[in-house]
Image 1 (cartoon, one colour):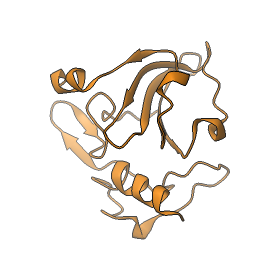
Image 2 (cartoon, rainbow, N blue to C red; image 1 turned 120 degrees about the vertical axis):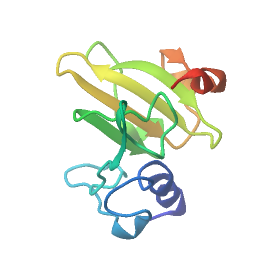
Image 3 (cartoon, rainbow, N blue to C red; image 1 turned 180 degrees about the vertical axis):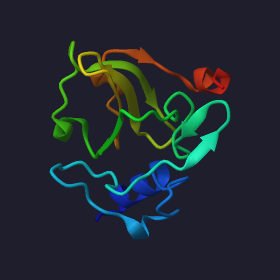
Length: 138
């Protein structure tokens, strides 16, 4: 596993995971080329908000059961097509130069979060969230 992937999993998934606080328990997901941890289980609960993913910024950290979190090294290798079935809602370029996208699949009522380990903000057509917006969120 390269260092970029290791850092991404430890930054975005390991905090608050019930499996462990570092990448030692990492398991590659079956049937996919995505690089997120296949053993990841969100384990932080805030009352009355619900479960949150500690490694994610506000606006991207709320967890629901039908949420798909996907991490990709580059936008092009993801093979995602944002369209009427996969609608990006928010995009955010964080301080690490990673692009985070939160969206919905209306047909299946699934929520997704895509993390691209590069700045691909211009390739995604949706509302861009800035640091000031994140600071105002609860």
